[in-house]
Image: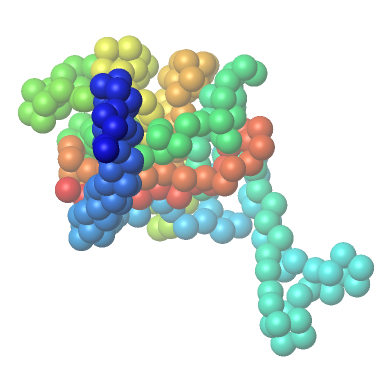
Length: 272
């Protein structure tokens, strides 16, 4: 004779079975979602937003040029070679803020996040590109103003919260062709009022630009503001003229240096 289960026991059994089935389906669904996302991303055009750099490329005079020498056996001081050792490698000596690089909050703020503490989810973001080049013919050192931003938003829509907002000036083209001109001062950059507006009113997550500095004020007002409020920035970006104003994603990475205060970064855009 079959015994009847207590209703509560029967309900528990049903719930358990449902839970097990859901657990077996959910990972498969999640995997399929990631697979679909990968195929979408892989089908898109990628744009490198990073400069190649070497020992001769532009850097702030207060830091000095990098040194890149063959790494040697510490005992014999003989450089490793493929012929003798089967491999070769390089000893790099450069300041963290070299080439296309990340400035974490701790660069200016003793209590700010270091490179290894910036959340991973802040390293892939919607990318907004603001174009300052129409203003440069009459003002080669134009600071992108709040009225410029409002004009951009009237044409392209409001800057969405959580974005990475990059300023296009096309001065990246001087990086290899005219390094001394690239290091000029003043240069086209951000206006402080625009930076404040982007972070306070548009809730941007991070910003970036093509120049060595955020703005040309003596006190570095914009950079101080950004880093003291827990945001990071990417300096010395490239190829922003190859990215649409809206719709792209930016992926930016850097080495996970413990308590790192800045380092060359690799940034690229995924176009819509």
